[in-house]
Image 1 (cartoon, one colour):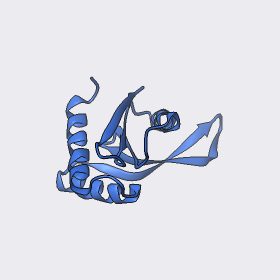
Image 2 (spheres, rainbow, N blue to C red; image 1 turned 180 degrees about the vertical axis):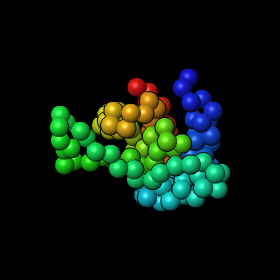
Image 3 (tube, rainbow, N blue to C red; image 1 turned 90 degrees about the vertical axis):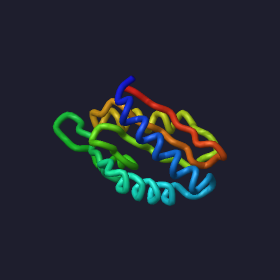
Image 4 (cartoon, helix red, strand yellow; image 1 turned 135 degrees about the vertical axis):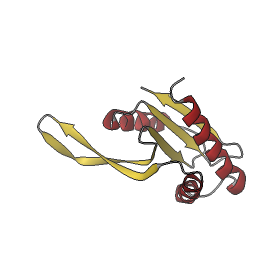
Length: 121
């Protein structure tokens, strides 16, 4: 499994946030809480990391913004929705393609139980 220890630490942090806040908040609330927890645990991250898309000899006008990039190698995508949709997985795959990273953790805080998926390229 790619980035086993790092994934374990990240998922533990996700559960910490969910256990304290529960489900039902907007995504931004969970992002703020995650930022607090990541700083507290000294886990390096970048929030709302911008990615551009190179096409031939130009940079396309549309940009991607990953919710978090953890340890400069793991994309973390936050959702607060009833259930995951294939478009959420496609979004993660796009982030992996433009970032050159190999792992994205997709997480859903909406429900009573925390849900997450590891997406590997």
